[in-house]
Length: 404
Ligand code: HEM
Image (tube, helix red, strand yellow):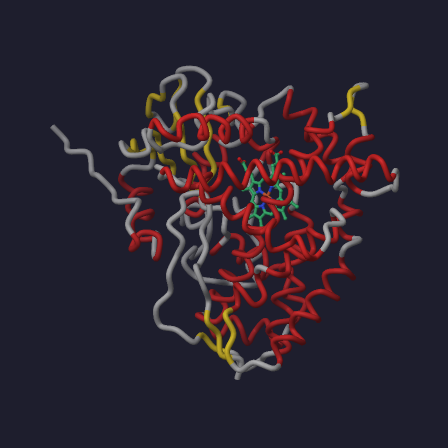
């Protein structure tokens, strides 16, 4: 009888360097049953790109998006799960089609591109503040403020509220990515969520009363097949966009700068050839993108790569593993900022493809370009890096950098 190998997908060693285990899984157990996650785990590019687009798999998780806690926090966890379930990213057609259509009419490519000057201006202010320092912690000093300030501009949020909103959003992500949340995490997220929902519902009321042609006003007044979003749905969409924008872009900037600092030849190539920034950002999304996994559920009994999957079972699609699959990418463990054949999974694929893709690419290009041009001699100022133990998001707790 063959013994099924057990992989430790939860240790700090795994989060620090997941590739050795992921490479082994891809070769020996590409469709792996993880008892702790009570889910299948996919590591091959082909299986992942098929599963996240196939209509036989859904994103609805039957009210079980976050798990954990004791009986004392059951009601609060149910509240959080109920709220998450209303998000576009956890909704299937036809509900998803409706929400996505309204959002896409407002968050157009052109609209996102129109934030270019604003992003350049905010980046240059942040860089100015860094100039006085010799040592920085890139995440707190730059990678968190930039996306939070851009989102504040987008939704006309007063600067005084930005820190609080960031704390709420971090709390939400902690629960979303926790494989077994503690009572403390559930309590914190619940209280943050209640405040966050109230904050955005009040903001929506304010915009509806003022009748200015703001983004929020447009969201409330755009229709699809004769239907508009309710006040509560507009507030929820703003929270989704805020959470989507805050955590991910922060970690793409930080993971990306780390990857460049660890690959000095690629960093100098980019410094000497600024137009390579577009392909460099795509390569960073592949090589060290922050979206570590997305989850699907089988709608009926089916198979993936010859493995039987039962109706209702969950499937973790490890985007990071797919992005490092040698069957799909030439020398995937090498960072190559001029890589051409690079249809990576870092922003998803199919109907749930990232709605903020244009914005996040724009922000990351401007951020990384400005950092390396303004601080050409910067270097990594720590030999030990701590990674966040989160299955949804790959990111560092901090990134100390010396500027010269
Ligand atoms: C580096 C930055 C980002 C990464 C890596 C990222 C990654 C992703 C991924 C992988 C998905 C697909 C989820 C799935 O298939 O289940 C997604 C969806 C989504 N993202 Fe992003 N994202 C980023 C930035 C943003 C930003 C800046 C926004 C908002 C301004 C945003 C808003 C969304 C929304 C609303 C969805 C759901 C789309 C849908 O369900 O139709 N994201 N993102």
